[in-house]
Length: 185
Image (cartoon, rainbow, N blue to C red; front, side, top):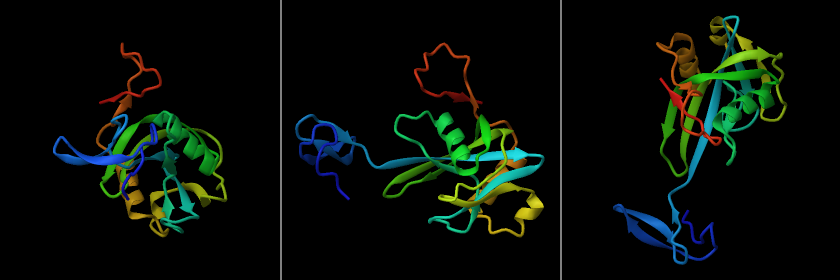
């Protein structure tokens, strides 16, 4: 789908070559439409050698067991997003430990998915009844008999058998964060 009107000023857009790529550009304010993107987050919460999973109640993947997650809000720091999504879907309180995996899906709406290792704080898993209809902590053995999504199987392997601590939040920087998040090895 082509962007026909500028989201900044409402004037018509036209196609121009920028850096060798056809881009939609506003005829009035020269705002550039860089593309359509979505950023998703997922939580890998382990408690007592069991992984927190939810059963999807909606498409895509309805009926599959996955790790809790969702999409960031426009002005929401990503660390807050993943904590919020776990709480909304399961009622479990968590804290971010670090980033352990990333999936890149270039398509009409380019999707980037960032998986976080989370520290369990408290709460008993309870499905929200809207996005998910099941929630709980499951052992690797239990997961063998469940309909776990392939991507979630991969993420659980990363969380359980990862070789390092991933990207950790950098709170000790001289750069003013102003709501931005920085992560480093």
